[in-house]
Figure: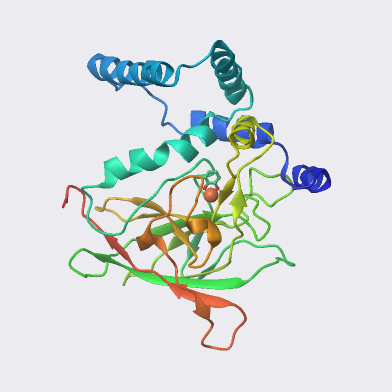
Length: 294
Ligand code: MBD
Ligand code: FE
């Protein structure tokens, strides 16, 4: 990116600190950080293991004082930039998700990431997500059906989606976008079918001007995620699934910075068969009952 392009991007998108502080606030308000439920024995075990792993790295790689102080300054910057949600969701959440979904039958999940917003507009299927009048990009008709693991249709299923626009920006995290742009909660019909009209999102670069971006450039990595649609599905009596769908052929499917791509999460698009503009794709959801495991 040239300096000019970087300036334009920051004007459109806001800064890492803006996006980071919103993600940090949102996490604080989400009800997730209660913490008090983790027993002392687990805290001691896990914090002890983490500290030991860090100490082992120092020994193995003979870490210098210059490197130690660079780490200290960087960790302070992660907090100042509000980028703990971004850092953790990019470099750690994928393993937490793998470990916690390994016994759940049905549709694969993947990470939630830092940009979910609850209480998006509730729309009955067939639905059209909020878009601007002059919205750029390729229209995408996304449909599917919810069944249980025996193939029976599920009633009362809903599908929350959120994704970036065709320039790679998320509403409520980049300035100047309508609050509910590309965010919706679609109610499937009584046979579990849903149809949703949206636009194909663009590949996404995590903010490059904050602490995470500093790490990426200091290490010579890249900041890209493949184009993806975030989805949370749920139905009464079933285990919810948080996932993302990706597009075959995206060069970043193979080197997602967040390590969140799985082969089961590819959305195969074809040109619309009814002559309408854009593409269509379908994806069926198989949900496990509460308590059901492999
Ligand atoms: C995203 O859109 C995302 O999905 C993740 C995991 C991290 C940063 C931005
Ligand atoms: Fe995302």
